[in-house]
Image (cartoon, rainbow over all chains, first blue to last red):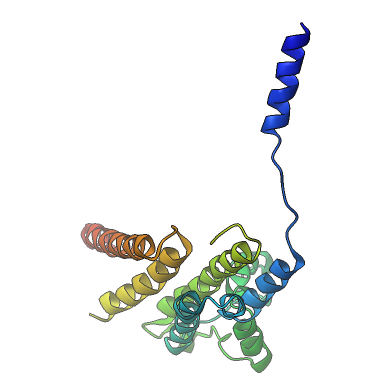
Length: 151
Length: 56
């Protein structure tokens, strides 16, 4: 009986995962990576990744704006409710400072019929959404590297 | 032609990030990125042809 209890105790001890606390610097890298696409990997001196991932996000965003896409905020457009604007807004918000600067300057938020009539309007929207989502991936990658969970 | 070009640019950008995030070595990342790019293009073309035959 005692041997069984000991075995059980041993197996329970073995199955307990040892979790190291996340270093505070990793959170800072994560925030920097979200705020300025590519900055997280630049801080980690991962130049190649910074160029590829940050460059992809920037290019995606610029192409989206060039194609006439529009970003989402909480203002209701064309009779839709504000709640419906939240998911795409979260995606757009992923681009960090790019979204904030455009929002402050009022650039890229027009969705009037004239803008929507452009052939590349929907492509632009998609590129802008994807730029934000790709930057979330980039941010998580930079965070994992800073936390020592990834080489 | 413009649609195909936009789809290609989109596939390049997305697969570059997907490739950089995944796997461990540079070679594995590159191969994975190329694979994702090919999948994006193939699925895009297949969907395009399916939609072509569906009446509006």
